[in-house]
Length: 586
Image: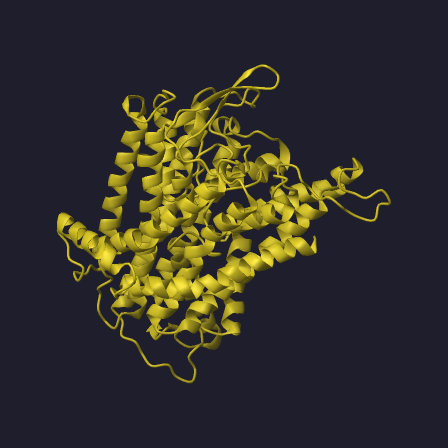
């Protein structure tokens, strides 16, 4: 590890900490209906939308009504996107003449983008028309992100409510998320990316002559506008197949820095929004610090693992110095030279901590130690910042679990922000925190043990198991990144050649994993909010557990780590940890 690498990482974290309270307070004012700088410009459009759908800003919903609105909106979004992908061949803005995606790939892609996962079993520049990219996928990048933000705000209202069952209005929260937060920042981000060289055009692909005298097509398209929201909304799906390692998506060190800032910008700022809305900034900072500590551990371990390289590389003279004094170059396989190890591992840790899924290096090329970090980040439940909205409401479920455990330890009724945490809330918390891990383990087992799942696995041994666990961990937790080896296309020499059904198997299994992983925790969080909303706030007493200090931060970290470790440690032993031991011992 180098001083320059740590300076890059430190500067990034300083910028993130500085922006968190600024954007967080702004969003709190937006969601509480206060006037902000954009109100004169956007208020007419906001009122027009409310009239068009027949709602009012002041009308409220209980948690069931709010949940129905979320599900209806998401179902309609799913149907619209699936229709777009299945009729691509007759749509405009298709200069390459791409046909429609197969039904199973379209099912997987639709479930992926509606659930804010953006897992991709296809190459964007070889599959999707400009119309599908802009009107289909980019629109869902905005909408799925706005849904997560709206649900979080409803959960916060449930926590601070004083006996009312009103969680706000989903349509109002959705509209404000789009108009006042996602659209303005995305527009500024897209303009900046264009200035850095990210392509933004409706022209067809370029056909050029190579130095060897051959012909090559160079993919273009309206990328910048999609890249901005893919990072800001923690979506992560690439316009091009190689995602953010592609120079047309991420051409410079400055664009790399801004894009990785965008990944955590809203998830981090929402902790400050939470603190503002509950009336205690310290509560928000306690959660922020918890997330930051877990993130720093991940970055440090991944950076150290990749900088050290592997014994196999040392034996080949790739990373070790001539006198055997130690590694000098590190593992640069699968990494862009313009970014290096520090920026690559920083991105890998951040994107998997944030439910983003975009990559600027190949995770499949990481060492066992470096590669275990992105996997563990996801298997914690995507609560280390997590997705926009979804990460924080997932973390709040862990907060309630930590409060409950602390209450059991001291023998008193647990409370959080003046609300008693009782059996009903804990049952819902367990559903929200354990359903997805169970789903991931079951689907991984099914994929590993069947001939249809074997078709999708590229590597043998621990790496092949890691690919599978990573695939369903990524899809179930709505991340979207991949180890690259696991695919929805039949490998030429895959064991137990299962033919085309192997493709359908991976597409359908992954699609259902993404939908369940998105909506079960979401509904559990809303149900918890609905239960808490009906309770009156009791004043804090001398025995009340403080949830805004360092002691609670340590307790919360402990609970998150223990839940993840007890659930996934045996599986990790079979995959990346086993691979790491193999690299060192054999």
